[in-house]
Length: 76
Image (cartoon, rainbow, N blue to C red; front, side, top):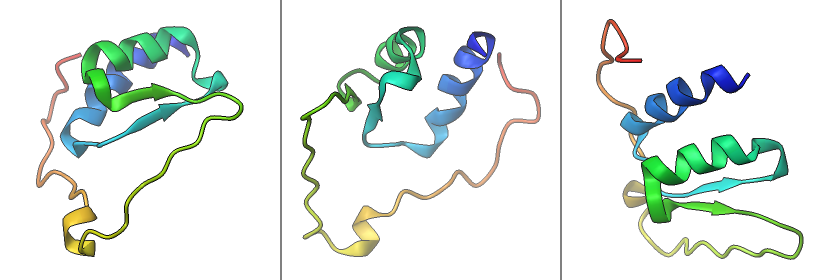
């Protein structure tokens, strides 16, 4: 499904995802496409990797809202 990588990466943009943590099944092409688009927000997990997320923020501050609308014709 490599042909879907560009569309998938672009489609994630409106969601303003804070962290992308990829696994081995993501594949190196998708990992690099995500890293090129989202920079420091992308990490590759491996055996022994640990992530700690601070939940002390108010729940309303942790919510990522979906976009109000989408383009009728994607740019891809």
